[in-house]
Structure formats: structure tokens, C-alpha cells
Amino acid sequence: MKRYILQDVETGKLKAWTLKSILREINRDRSNEYTPYNHTDWKEGWFNMGVEGDIYNLIGEVRI
Image 1 (tube, rainbow, N blue to C red):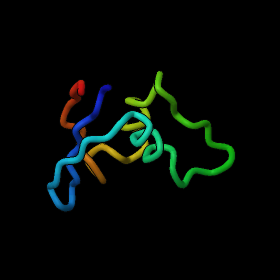
Image 2: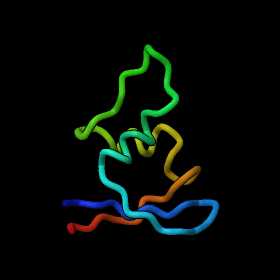
Image 3: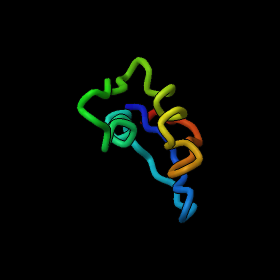
Image 4: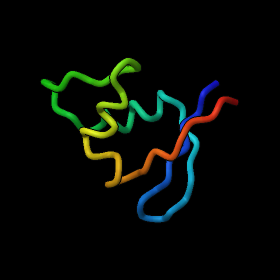
């Protein structure tokens, strides 16, 4: 299973998230007209929806 290593911008703590958790973060608090990101375009969403650098930094990925 693949996990993504993220660093919390505020605390500096590292977290290991699944893609499901990442998609939940990208797509949360959006309007009904919003088309959610999915497994094919999540990186675009990560960088365009204010997650990268504002909340978390994507460090890398590992297979478990």
C-alpha cells in the first residue's frame, strides 16, 4: 500500500496519509457546484486548492 509523507506547516510534524485521506483534505469544504478531485488528478488539486505550502508540504511517497 502506498502512503504519502506530509509535513504539517504549523507544527513541522510528519504524517503518513493514504490517497483517500489526501483526497478528503483537497475536496473538503467545497460548494455543491465543485467537481471533486480524484485519484487521476489529485496532484493538480493538491497544488491548486491551497493545500501545498499553506497546510501541508508533500515530502514524498513510500510503499508499505
